Image (cartoon, rainbow, N blue to C red; front, top):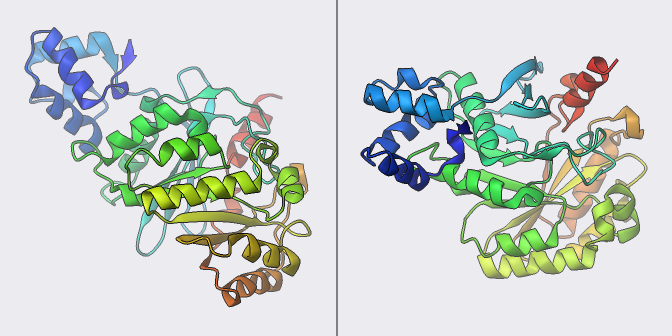
Length: 346
């Protein structure tokens, strides 16, 4: 059997036509799945009985099993899901006064082994399918029980641009009016800096947001934190970013995780302002790192964080400082999965 969420609306229309059915039922099915959140073909009451039976014989609706959930004191909620093959992924709901953001995984595990991230500590397993990505979004939407999921960030486990085709397929469905209808400008792809993927994304004619995990302003430091820098240097990455901005007219956000004694002093702030000087349509999002004991990673103190931020502002860099979220539930990417796997492997 096949996950019906792997089908685009056109795919489903064609499948119905081959069965001798009416194509208009495809939009009804999409509405039941993505807008009403139904997880059972029998509940699709405006479909002919024979069609519901045929759908049950050929497709399944649900492949995720929620195995654990934890909620922070400030409202951030993390979910641990088991896929049909028992691989484990995470998703997060991050509420603020003006928005509710869903953070979505795109791979089971990660190949890129960034030192401040727990996602790759258990190795890479496989890409998620478009249907599995969509089901994460469905679960978060249904869990909110009437509250609106306003934004999505592809910043969970895995590298989105390493699973390019399935991620873009899922985003097109997420953005479409017949499914979730979440605006493209409210959808963010975060990449560790895969230059070929950035180049390909620039030609998609989509108004999604692009976020680059930068985290250092020199190749030696970035290479120590992010092995991907050995394949795509800062110079190559920034050239791809300039080309992306020129081609799309879209702003890029540079994510910069502040790590004590590694990249958070004023010399690093100066280096960062130097390499970004003259780069139009960009901003820096400073993120105090969530502590990861396996890598001896800790955030800087509050004063050092503010000094770093203020230096960038003084030198004309557009800066935001992300408020730490979910620290009491280890909400950094991959941490809940890591703890779960540690316990269940004993």
